[in-house]
Image 1 (cartoon, each protein chain N blue to C red):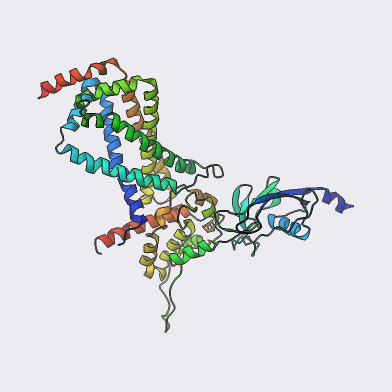
Image 2 (cartoon, helix red, strand yellow; image 1 turned 60 degrees about the vertical axis):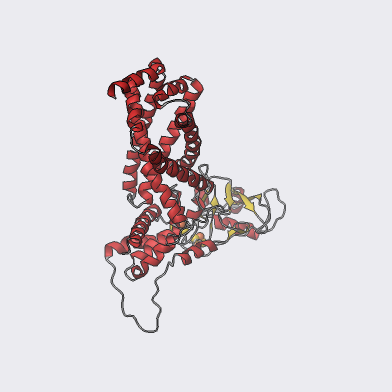
Length: 254
Length: 224
Ligand code: SF4
Ligand code: FES
C-alpha cells in the first residue's frame, strides 16, 4: 500500500539526446517514479532500467558519464536547468521540474549527455601542469612549502578538470583557441610549489602563446560557476602579472 | 620571441589606454570648454591643438595608427567571442558583451565623426576655426544629436570598462577586492567623461556657435 502511494509522485525529465557525434540532437521527455533523496544520476539510472518515454513508448536508454558520485571526478558534468554542474551532486528535491538535461556542448558530444573533455587534458599538457622530478638518481627532499601558501594552493588543487568553467566562458568556442580558465589556474598552482617553481618560466611561456592567457576576456563567469569555488579570476590576474613580468624580463635580457 | 596572439592582444590592451584612452579624456576636456567658456573657449582649445608642431605626424602616430590597430584587431576579438548573457546573467558577463558591442559602435562612430570634422579640414572644405559651427550644425539636428550621444556613450563605456580590464590584463588588480574597487573607479570615470562630452554636445546646439568662425578668427587675430 505504501508503495503505491509513493509511486504516484513522479519526476519529470526533458533530456537532450544525440545518437552519434555528428547527428542532430533531439529531446525526449521522461516521467519516472519519485524516491526520496534522488539525484540526477539516480534518475538516469531509473531511465536506464526502464527506458520508457513519458508517453509510454520505448526508447533507447540515455547515456551519461559518471564515476565517483561525490563531486570529485568531474565526469558527470552536464547542463542541468541551464547551468553547467555535476549531475551526482544535483539533488532532485532542490531542482525545478521538469528537469532539463543537456550535454556541455562546448565539448564534442559523444552520445546523449556524454562529452569528450580531451581538450582540457591537452591544455594541461600544453602548460606542463606537473612537477618534473623523474631522473636517474634520488634528488633528495625538495624545499618545504610555507603553511600559509599551502592553504591557498590547496584550494587550487581541488580542480577536477570538470569543464564547467570552460562551458561558462564566452571565449571558449570553435572560433577561439583559448585553453580556458582551469589550466591557467593550474599554472599558478604548480608555479607556487617550491619544486614546481624551478620550471615556472616554461609554464609562463606556454601561457604566452596562441590561445593562452590572452584568450581571457574577463567575463568572470568561470569563478561564479566553479563547483569547487576555485578563485579562477584571481589566478588569471596573478598569471597576467607573472607573464607581464616575464615579458619585460625577457626584453631586458634579464 | 616569436610573434603570436599574446603580443597582439597585449598591444591591443595597451593602445586602448595609451594613447587612445588618454586621447578620449583630453578630447572630452577640450570639448567641455565649449560648455564652460562658449565658442571662444572651444576655439582656443582647437587653436591650441592646432598649434602643436608636426601635428599631422603626431596625429598619424599617436591616433590614427593605434586606432586602426585597436579597431581592426578589436573586431577580430569580438568575432572570437560568444555572448551567453542569457544563461549567465551576471553583471560582469553583461559588461563583457557590452564591451564588444560598444567597441563595434565606437568603430563606426569614430570613422564617421572623423570624416565629418577632421577630414573636412584636411580636404579643405572648412578651416579648423569653423569646427565650432560644424559641430553646431551636427548637434542641432535631432537625429545627429541622438547618434552622437549614442556614439559618445559607447566610446566612453568602452574606454572605462576597458580600463578595468586593462588593470587585470596587465596584472595590476589581482584579488576580487582590488577588482571591485577598480570597477567603482572606472564607473566614476564613465560618468564624468560622459558628462564632459554630453554637456559639450548640448552647448554646441547654442546659436553662438553659428557665429563661431568669425569670433574665433577675431580672437586668434588678437592673440597673434
Ligand atoms: S576550475 Fe572549477 S570549474 Fe574549472 S575544471 Fe576545475 S573544478 Fe571544474
Ligand atoms: S561522478 Fe564524479 S563528479 Fe559526479
